[in-house]
Image 1 (tube, rainbow, N blue to C red):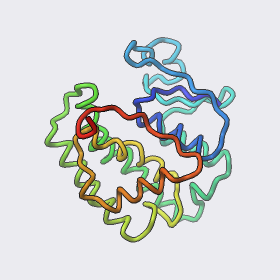
Image 2: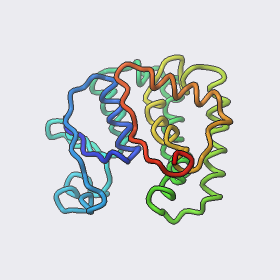
Image 3: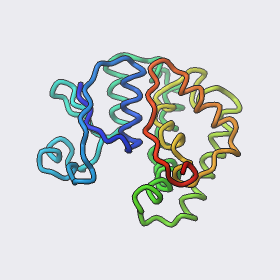
Length: 203
């Protein structure tokens, strides 16, 4: 497998993390976003949306980070990470939607402001970030992982942008259950760290 990625992309990191947790041999191919490599014709053939990550599984191309997580879990028949039972599957899907929604437009967007000067309104994205973190912190009072007693693709999808939230001036100190959950993810065999950047509260 080949993973087209960028080390500062949380979307890329969640796939790299899952590949490592599953012990899947893979080749990392850097896409130089600063030089516009994601908009080059050859890359657009892989992903017309011009976004990382892209997974090339021996010629089978899968785009979108959450879609790649689903693909890997299904292909490798890892129902421990992506349950088949209807209610358990629905609980995982709920948090995958949160990763693509509230996390993307909260902690991830806040980080884009400090890291790349993105034109979001800081007060709006910080409010969204803290709103979703309060919900996740409350959920983690009940269990060690967001959707089940053991880690699932939901945890993988949420981890990267929550772990890097301080880079976007999102203070995690008020969310003890979230911080304990981050530590549990980081203690998993095969964990790969998301590249840190000294900006925001992480400066």
